[in-house]
Picture (spheres, rainbow, N blue to C red):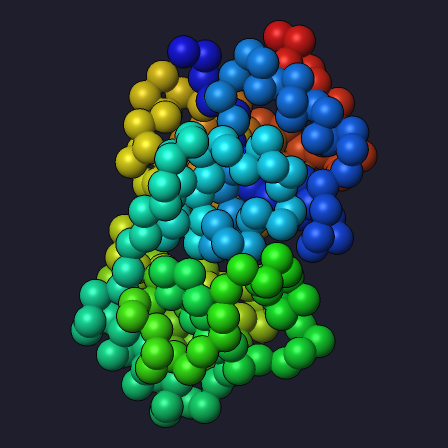
Length: 244
């Protein structure tokens, strides 16, 4: 099997939070004829479906930065927070009063602003329900709208995966050991190497372990990438891979 090509979505393939341009879609379909494709996003898989056309939704998908896995043509596996980890998240929310987005296995709980970028991308396909966090059977991915360093340290000391996004004033939290790269290993798709495209802090490990790495835009944490692209360069770069 040829090496898979792994793509982050927002800021890498999708630049308006809703769609992928026709030229990028055509390039992806050309590449699919010679390599397996994997789409790896911070979004839960529920929120990837409205962005990807139906034929590409059937490819392997990684959602929630690794908490959600869809094997090619298969069902969805979900990794949840341990009870003690969930209790810690709840305690920090209560102590700080910060707004949050918590994804369960499918439904979600959101208390942030209605004009935030994340909210505008949330369940665009109307596939789920918004509920209180107590109604979620499990927590699979958490976003806290805070930059409190003490909160970040408490979460990290508990072994949780924490990614800080200062430009958006929030932190992403995933269960211990969860990352896009770890999910790729679990899918058994990177044994012979892979190519990866990404754009932000969620993609550091994914790009660091890739045989060939492409950073879209400018991000200090991804300065090590083999190739640096502007958005207009993405489709030509994908076509270049398709043509060998």
